[in-house]
Image 1: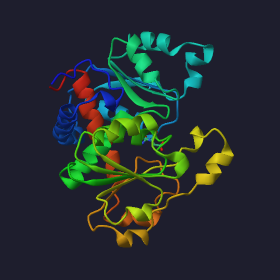
Image 2: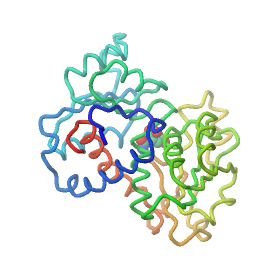
Image 3: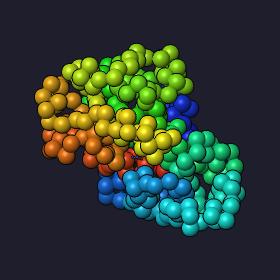
Image 4: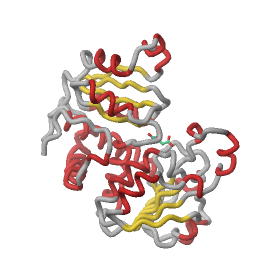
Length: 306
Ligand code: NCD
């Protein structure tokens, strides 16, 4: 399967075979990322981050360094020429002269796709507004496969902000390529985006709920998300849904013994700290899996793995 030179913008663009292939490659990269290698020697990654980030930017950088490559970029658009009024299209056409691959995070939906139209090097979407976050979803999927040994046949619940949360949009597209029973739990106001819902409903069984108690007993994977405060049009709207869901050790009394609890992080109050020490908590394992998945993706789009 050819990934050399490919942009990674949306999981809508992926087939099941392609995702399975990426998951397989990630598995082979697990020991490589751990011990280090010179696979990406002389390769340069540019990270253009126009929005806050901890994990996405640092894990791409860490993956690049582990594989012998190097990184340049900015995490603060304010200190780049964006401040002087440079367009994204121009920035990308400049930066592609400095780097072999570009990861971009931008508050506007469609930004990564626009960048890809102008760039000749691969563009990886590190989060495009409330739209998508494909590399996060791929590492989530990798975590599910690692923990459950399969994806088909699982009951998966996505909980929280399904409207503004971009990770759940990408994850829903990806999960809809497998035989999963998808349970969407959110306040009425934060229901799954219509365009995502329409696509996934054609492929798998999807049900929408408001209460976590309606699904908690039967789920294999519980994926919690943060209510995306910064994307709300006004503070009063946010106040209505703030703190809608909270997982604590009490609620975990009624779950399946092998329930896997995930969260893309950062968390606010959706998962009580007391849950961290339970065997369900896998959200800090997701962080390492992010290094593994991003190592695989960099190797693939740079044509060093096939
Ligand atoms: C997420 C994001 O940026 O969309 N963070 C991440 O990349 N792990 C989730 C969030 O901000 O809630």
